[in-house]
Image (tube, rainbow, N blue to C red; front, side, top):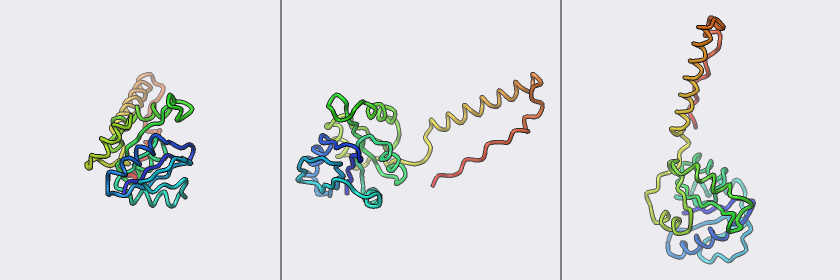
Length: 183
């Protein structure tokens, strides 16, 4: 099953029309939370709004999730380990009040499991790829690089303080707690 969500703030007719067209070509069920979109979807199961519990159930049951570029949906894909195709709303098409979703997906272009559909042709290409990798809650290389850089900076500052006589015992400062494994 493919689950489509447009969030709770605004409808996203361009995405729903594209997914309805795709649903006509596949035997796989397509369920969509359409967020007040009043256009008629003929080939997918459309619901205006759904409860948080039903959202979680649809997310868990889905083989693939297709969505707007909402952070909540992105985090859910990572939490449930689902491949996510993200199509950002565009201000120029009057789909949102600004282009923050374009900025969001630009920052996610190299995140494994988050697949970007800049336009509907990208969406159809991605939907035909049955080997999309799932999103993961594991930290990416940028987090490791940030932690490494901060650790080096702190060690350098401590050494400089000891050399200046400002800090005679760096062990007075507790080490940061070990990182807990994500669930």
